[in-house]
Length: 331
Image (tube, rainbow, N blue to C red):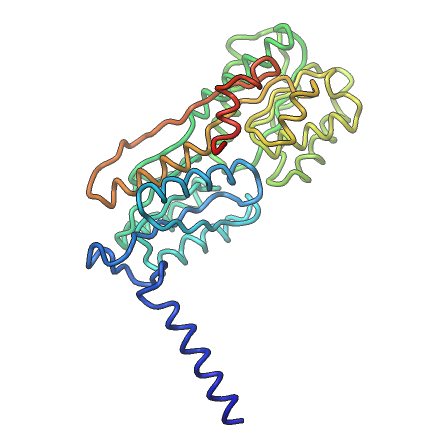
């Protein structure tokens, strides 16, 4: 029994030694007190961790971390509708006193208080991908999402010949990025294509591919026989609609434009089941988000708004060097 007690004490001592000031992720912020004693630590918090979009952001953040000599901690909720978990992740990093936080708020209101709490504790915050109803952040690195919606709307209208019936499957309430895409799409349709009738614009896909598939099936069951076009504003809603169109035997017969890319969506594009994908540059977004945070830690003031690119991918350009570089940034 004494031997077991001694072994337990030694194990606990080793565990806590590994979590002390000499480890990469320190619970205190010693780098701010004694510059050069360790590499700064930047927490990068996505909306979710399963979709390819976030994996590309992670890769960009890691590349920036390597180039700028900072440690990157990647942590976020598994599902993109788990506001409370994302809030807890931010709060945990505040408690660990990381040097900076890069976060993609999955709700522009719910993340306001934790972000402001971080800044109040002296931890600078850079926002990526989706906006926040606060001015506390140091920089906002994101796509021009409203313009992305406009691009998607114009491409869909072109595929439809400027007339017919179309619908918008929205993503999720509270998501600023996708809301801006949806509003850009509606703006173009209403102002530039009066002969296109929007039969549904108020249904939401939800945060998962499964919920998007179900919502898409419901819409196709109701409108599919007379439908000519569909627009979806993110990866999961686009994937859910793709599967619903294929299941219903309507893939390729209804013009379909989505947002973001993944292996499955590119396959759908090549097969003729998707007519266009509005692509962001998530790798660049992750890289620039970390670079802006490093800029703040170095005592500089980054640009308040840092844009990242947009490209409509079609079957005609998917194999071009420009698009392949966007789809495979690490290749």
